[in-house]
Amino acid sequence: MSQKLNSGSTYTTIKWTDSVFLNMLGVILFGLTLFILLYCVGKKEPAHFPPGPFALPLFGNVFNIAVKQPHLYLTQLADTYGNVYCLRVGQEKTVFVCGWKMVKEVLVTQADTFADRPYQALYARLYNQHTGGLLCSNGKTWRRQRHFAMGTLRTFGLANGTVEKSICQESRHLHQAITHHKGQAFNPATVLNSAVANIICQVMFGKRFDYNDLNLRQLHTMMTEMVYLEGSVWALIYDAFPTLMKHLPGPHNRIFTNFQALQEFIGTQIKSHQLDLDPDNPRDYIDTFLLQIKDKENRELGFTEENLVLCCLDLFIAGTETSSKTLQWGLIFLVQNPHIQDKVQAEIEHVIGPNRFPEMADRARMPYTNAVIHEIQRMANIVPLNGTRMATRDTKLGDYVIPKGSTVLTILTSVLFDKNEWETPHTFNPGHFLDANGNFVKRNAFLPFSAGKRTCLGESLARMELFLFLVGMLQKFTFYAVEGVPLRSEGTVGLTRSPYPFEIRAEAR
Ligand code: HEM
Image (cartoon, rainbow, N blue to C red; front, side, top):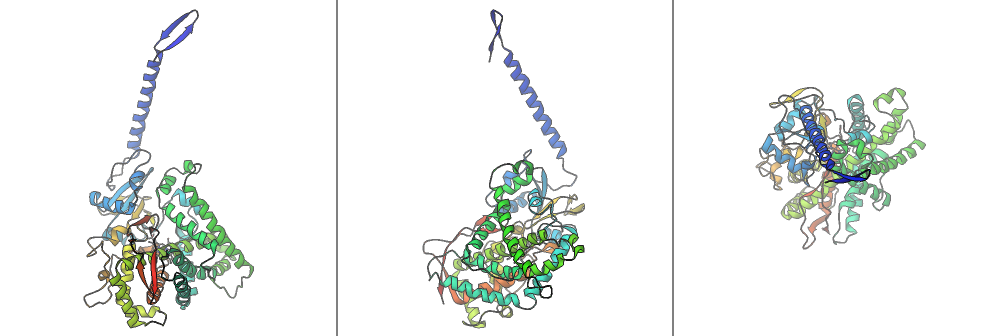
């Protein structure tokens, strides 16, 4: 490492680069030590903070979580660190809570403390700094909008039986679409997405869409991709480094473009409602919301056109992805367990018969079918990590202190498969919901819809959809695997847990 310098007529060889190199190395090492020291001092946990694995400077545990099945990894960590532990995502610490007892403590016992969603850069960009929509807003806007959405769901469907009727009518379209495959292999995801989406579309927009509507099919594909990416490592990295990620190419950008496309679709529905809005005769959620916007005092509570788009979007996404995927898992589990499919069909035959459409009133006389649907939901584990919460005050969880502002994730997987609560946690077993006499029994640890103040807003609607669609399909068809192609029980995990694309056969009964 030497260099020749021309100094007048003679060449002087000085070994100066060696010393420059050593000096630079010294500066870098000093900088690095200072960074680690400052990092350790800055990141010193408060007293009695939950423990957790070693976190890298800057990235924290992002790469630990970025495994294919994060819900399983996060559940397993409880074996090492206990049911309340901490990981760092970028610079932010997140508290993870596992097992029925501790999750109940967060969601139910301390419901007021953990009712808010924390700041997340990704959702701040999508949801107007967390002030918009139903899923991510907080405070009085969220309370008012949640109350309004639940009331409107009741008015336009749950209270007067309209939704029940529209699910039965939609079942006819679904059965036609399945019959169309003439017993050949098909992927049921497309028709189930359309059938389920049409129910929430009728409540929101007052209309259904044809299963062959290419525009809507494309929106479903975008929605599925978006929900996957929102629960992927890309979302974690975006939240950790938003300023940088905003300018970098990568899959995370599709979250924003897909969201935009969905917003435009909703915007079109709203515009057409504005053209023929009759104040004395609101037809659906959009009409009712538009009438609230007319009152200027309501703006503060989120009754604006911009927020109408976001609330519709939340209802559309939360109301389609979840129920449709549960039904897809249901078909997979029933094909994998043909003796259970047989028993459900026998009960349908006995209580409803082959011709009459199922009604919600039938459920009370169908304990076995009811138990099977509950077990489908438990094993499907559709929202494996639940929605994110935030501690709004300093509080205690078990032996640990959770400071105000901490992000908290209650891992629903750890509840739905809690070995202290379920006899055979990893086996599909409708017996979990039946007593010795075959009567249906409720179970405390059945939490697919979460619990407490932010529990799923669409639970009643979802339960209706699952019962009526599933019973309707099993009344008319028997489902089989495609020969030589076993169905997989593991799935892909984003915000929701989806089956890998699969095909089955349906034979008319
Ligand atoms: C099988 C079907 C469904 C499952 C498993 C499910 C599950 C969940 C879960 C786990 C949450 C998070 C709750 C929390 O953070 O504690 C949630 C929230 C939500 N769900 Fe569902 N859901 C389903 C169907 C629906 C339907 C049909 C709708 C539409 C009406 C809907 C609308 C919502 C909304 C708006 C929220 C946000 C509530 C809030 O933050 O206040 N869900 N759901």
